Length: 359
Image (tube, rainbow, N blue to C red; front, top):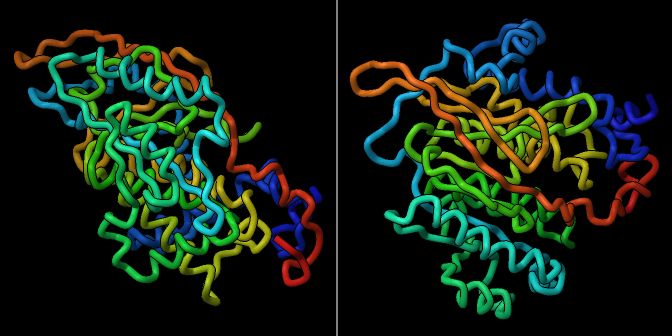
């Protein structure tokens, strides 16, 4: 198909590059993951097929999966949201999101708190610079949300990492790529739940915090690639999947700057919003989960393989007396999918060799 020309650095419809060519990228990312683990085998295509079942959400209801409840919460009672804009042209959240979406953020927080009234919840909003978005800061503080700056995170002391984030910020070219990293990083460091600002929660299940170390939610990334939604991230601090996920997207960025750039990481996707899917977003996140779910003694789960408001799964449990039981996990929420990351599909007009194109 025509979009395959993007892999030769000739850009044609780069925002839709992965629609129909996802397997090329899936293979490339998987190959990199295996080599990180010291496996230089060329049998990565067979490996993909063997691990594909890990993204079959219904399998976690099988009798072979049994979950034990912890006495204390595995996943902290913390929520995270992120608001980033071009530092040269900062924009307040109120100027880009509808009033109904803004109100839904705080209604969601209340609904989550009501799932377990015995716990003290902490709510964070992460921003680039508090002084650049004063109205947003005041608005959230009025609703008992603590404002944090991304540069408080220790990883920003790494100069190369800070430069990567600045690259995404430049001219607002890929703010969601920056957001993808920040959201994964805050969950990795603090644990808890990350929500996109347009993700609304009606019902939350406190059992998630006591039975699981990581919870993923299904999403059909493209018509031919089933993945895991990164509009909502749920995990304990330091989880292996988030460690591998962050390592992969940071390493791939650095490899792009060298002659070791992998074939799947072409300039057309790297320089446009299309890179969000497999460069930093839910495409690469799903591939990492496919390879590392339930490793290192973690109790992980994926819920629902359909993109719908109600997320429900019945798990097998084991109590302190080793008696088996059943428990239904029920969550209701919806992603309003404002899709600000698509940048109004501006990059879709890019055509030709990258050195002669204006991104």
